[in-house]
Amino acid sequence: MEFNLDFDFLKFPAAIVACIAIFLMIRHYLTPIRIAPSYKMVFDASSPDSISAKVTNMTDGPIVLTRIEAKPTYSLKTIITRHLKNPIASKKIWSNIHYGFPIYELLGEEPFRLESKDQKEFRANIRNHPLGLISAPMLLIEVELSTERKFRSRRIEAPKRWLLVNNIKQLRKREMKQPNI
Image (cartoon, rainbow, N blue to C red; front, side):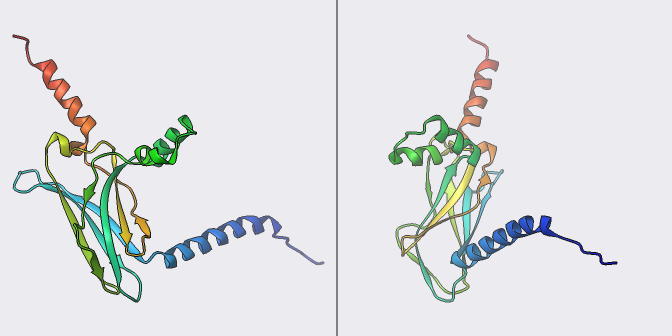
């Protein structure tokens, strides 16, 4: 008696898993830097809040960073919904669909040379002022190299007290509580 198991039904899922693994490996080797976004909140007003990005050079040679920006952004679901609502939007206004305001510069004017396997943290202070509040619920760090390649970090949730919409709601609540004289 001969017993033959045919595992043809496993070939398709195995091929999908293999393609995803290959894609992730290629992506890992093609990105020369790692970006770790974070923020610091100070509750006693001894110093301002700050956004920071820890940039790590993953290559064997030095790289030059020309620009590092912290941008308020929206979730992917919101961005896709906005594109679907206005499918013929020109490329000029795509940045308005993807990003909010203001954009914080973390690097300054001078380019920064990051040596091989080196790590550096860049920081921008946020003032608690209505003009310094962000308009989108998430933050994203964008790094540009001297070769004009741009790399973006993962999105992180912005603190509620930095959001413009949240502060407007709080002002309205205060106005409603105050008696009219």
